[in-house]
Image 1 (spheres, one colour):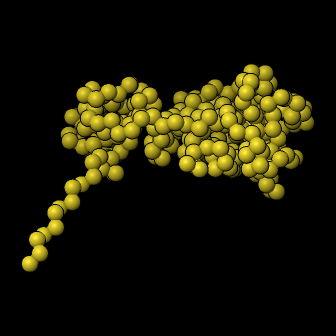
Image 2: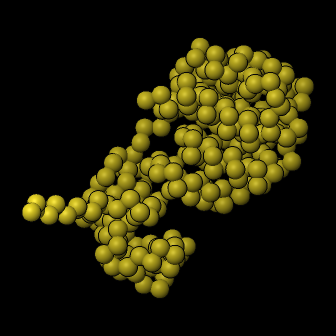
Image 3: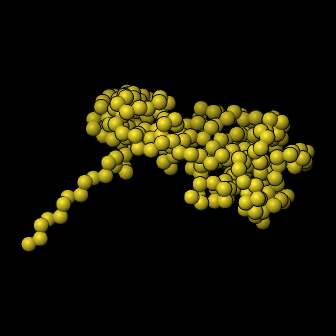
Length: 254
């Protein structure tokens, strides 16, 4: 009779381990105290108790396997056990989307994070339906999206600025791909022709007005692009443009 096969050793850390971003820098042997909503999520939603494994990321050193040492009513204390991977190298892509209605802009924040944007710079244009952004709430959306898609680097989320300020302070050497609903070079061809540091400028629901379009096209860094034959919503255009750029110049081709 054949011997019984060796029992499988469970993967460690388990793939089901929850993932969270923390603000403190992590190091082996250190301890982390988590409070507030994150503590509630671990102890009440995920039912994490002493000995449970949690993956923590600090947006500096990468991701770490940690062990719950204490799960109290209002806080969770964890010990940092093992460095799993360094902070990812993020493709140098900035997304510059015009502000949209709250639910639609929430989608832009979430999907831009999932797709790998390095920076999100909201832009205020004449036809924007909003001119303010709750940065704390927006940051929470990007953090939760990064946790869900296993990013180890958070996008840099900036305060909204006017289109004029964006153009006036645009850094030399960085292309500004302008999604122009009136036409431009096909996106894939433009991205293939202009590699390196890049930004994507996406308009609001009503599009850019004539003066804004002329100012953008006149900028030395501007490359007008087309995202196909259909007129896309702002959130759809942002998602489509990032996807094509990542496929041509980003980390999708690796």
